[in-house]
Length: 399
Ligand SMILES: *Cc1c(COP(=O)(O)O)cnc(C)c1O
Image (spheres, rainbow, N blue to C red):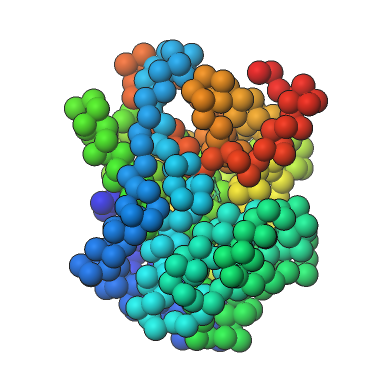
């Protein structure tokens, strides 16, 4: 458990974080702040959480030694297989944790925001499991381009409500969800990444920390040593990354590497490279790095992967980057596509486009032949088959 990078009692990681919410939300936010730790740390919560992770989610997920990939990069690469979770990514870890918190707070309805629909599907899934009504806000543009996930949510019994303001994508869906919560304070807002106001970044981080908890035990069993030399994860809001890094943060011998979406290139005006292009400001109730114009308007992000298409970054990551604890590697759309085909051909694993950013970072890093490197494969690529098929048809990938 990380000590040095633990959130402060008022919700800060260094200069970043906090709870910059409208007065109308104080009561809700304070209720959650006052109760979440006690709930999460209780024995009966932990028992129910861990049982669901095992019996429902399919944990522990494997730690796979990638022999051919290791040979290619002349080092030892292990893949943490979050793609093996029920619903296809790490997102269900957090959704399970938060629905159990909501139940203990006596909440009767769940709301969520979603971009590509992965978090919406995870939330609709746990709501079906727990028999709670579910409303998912989704940008109208995203609804049009992510129909399979919209249909999944509907089949699971959720109501998908279009966000019609702004660019009609993820940040607008988040705004709508916050607006809904102000009007319906008895609902529970289930946030999908390590973003937003305190205590969400910390709570989501704790639920996802199961990833690095398992990595430690699995590495020990396989290599005799609990710590790797490096851990690589992609960052959208930063939930799979915080999960993969969590139990290694205090150990300075472990390199922490964040792969960020550089879209068409850092200088192209079409990227989501928040930590490189971002400046300090407030987004969705949190002080962090975000992409904004000089007068504070949010710049629309771009990435080939919908899950990395967020104009901000979780406050812990802003802190890790600013203090130099984490290294950032920008990865373009094309590099991510190439990495997806490389993993598929070398290891027989089709990764999500988000995870492909973490894999592509390997090309920009150097490791010793004796190093042990973990790459977090945050999700599987089924949802990205249209993009992959198009790349094969155009011949636009080198593999
Ligand atoms: C949503 C998603 C991400 C990005 O979200 P984080 O909170 O940064 O982890 C990454 N990978 C997959 C597979 C996703 O579904």
